[in-house]
Length: 528
Image 1 (cartoon, rainbow, N blue to C red):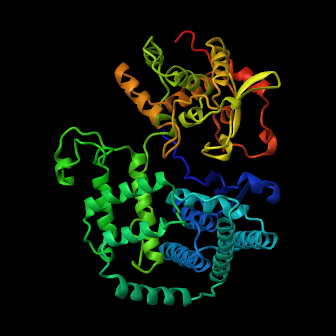
Image 2 (tube, one colour):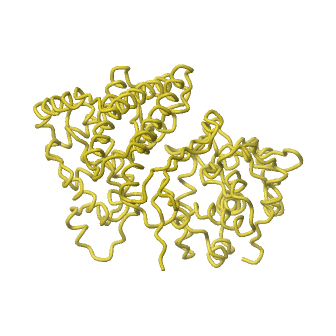
Image 3 (spheres, one colour):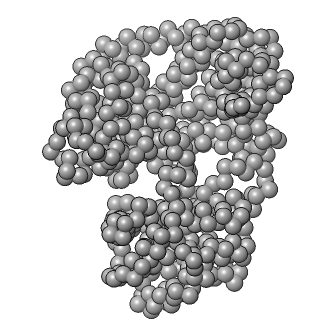
């Protein structure tokens, strides 16, 4: 007999379904609880899903981003998102097949009151933690980097809270039958105006204006890497749909066609000489080509959706036809870049000619620290030091050094195998030469110090017949630590990850190097 699993945020009990929503770790001390929970008062799955969707929508409004925008642009952006959120909520009501019971309505009203109270308190106390996760998520999605301590970021968080309060206030009125039709009426009028003014704009013109707005000299919203990525994505987008297609004619069905085409195309289409002079139709006609990865498809779709959000905000389209079209990834996160099997490690570390020091030390450091490629390539000699009697690699920000996240700032004890291999002697040798960096032969490029090393490792793995990439070292270390029962929160600290399963303050304090060293030493490749 097959047991049906309840959908996310729904819990099945004998008395019926319950809705559950975890509270962010930073808000748990404030709210005094780890999750919100409500009895839905029904055993019907369809009804439970509907009620859950309403409750979840209130707590998870996805708001767009701002980077160096003027106050007017920021407010206009949030106003558009407010309208979208209210329209989505109204659509959920229209889609409901059964009326709410009195108990369900009471629970809904209570949840709205609870969230609105929190939002108003956050505004009153200038506490922007409630806004940061939504703002950060959309900034990452759009490829915009913005310092959390910048004035624009603080303004965006505050305006987000104001918008969230307006949304919840409107939902409260709706929950007692007091509908406000002004937003719907203004939306219709705005849509008519947009149709009249934007019907002649082509996709190419929209892309050019979007890129120009984000790359104005002195007001750049994108890094050089993000700009190059976006321009490549939009170039392929225009190749597939055509430069002269009017933006107002880019419907949901058109974007679906773009999505289906994208899923059949090979990776690096714009870079590979094999495809450079071929049309999209010619490339699709080639048999046996491996399509690009799902994550790459989704990156393209996400950036195109950002383009249309910009177009909506500026009145060039009436709806965003590219919203929520990402492809579900059938692979688990730990399957996307698998760990190296023993036989591949043997081939990678077989005797070979070494031309530069990084070619010797980079794979070893990856194997025994689990650090990212760029984290190792950008390391300074001073990052290797003794703390409480333990030699560590301190992965930290600094001059020309960038980290992926706050959690990436960490100390990783050096495995005894690295010390036996002569790492400390190599570091001392570099100090005597007057070098400040671990690998001075690696020059800094657009994306950091890792580009040359990454290309070298790609050549090496192809030469020895290895499927994994350098990132597979991280999965190898994580897998080995799991196999010897190292706690998940300790692995997360070693790898520089946030530990999403932490729901209390039990693991709030980071482990000291001595304790981490005991776990690091459990990694054993002597039989590999």
